[in-house]
Image 1 (cartoon, rainbow, N blue to C red):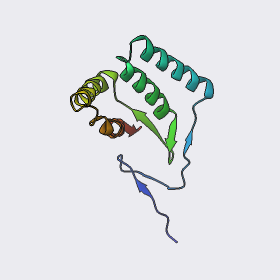
Image 2: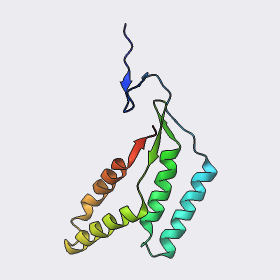
Image 3: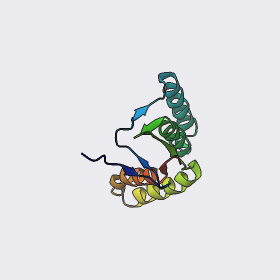
Length: 117
């Protein structure tokens, strides 16, 4: 039986049996969620992208898949531009575009999530 390997961007391979895990702690998660909530509430939602990127960056930083750690390089400023555009379209389409906002956000999140090299 031959061993299957997963190619990486650096030209090396990672065995598929490498461990995947999450090493974040409960106290950190609670702290980030509370801080994100406070940022969002006190700015009346205007700084939600800051809260979102802060929390998602923490999640990515503590996630290891097949022995490779994730990193998130998105910024609140990048997301804020998209967020404003998405909610503008939602407003002018009387809420119809809002059905696509979740998908747009997932695409943006995925675009900015990479393996640490």
